[in-house]
Amino acid sequence: MPLRAMGATGLLTIADWGVWDWASSNGHSTIGLIAGVLLVPLAVALTGFLALTILAVARNGARRAAAKRARSRQDLTKRGGGASSPPATSGARGRIAA
Image (cartoon, one colour):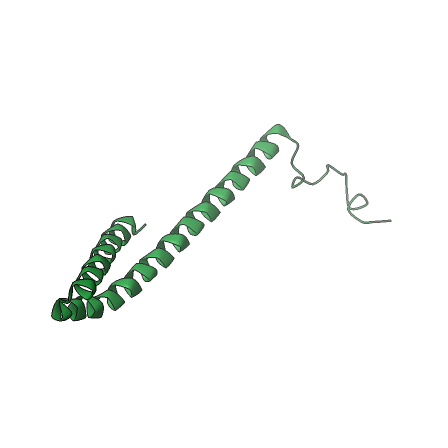
């Protein structure tokens, strides 16, 4: 998961927003302009990393759920309670529905 990248980008975005806010309110127009221009790509990168993190968490959750289902199926078949094993019949007559 890209947690480190998302955290670093988040910190840079918050710091840049703080610099932009400070520069805008104190009359430092050049610093405010630079911080404002840099704020847009940082915010886009943060949004992208957030989306990647959400996808990675969802993918891991789906894998864990699938593994849990597979383990429960294996436990059922080991106990003999699984529906996947066909009933024991003798000959072709037991396999054909009457």
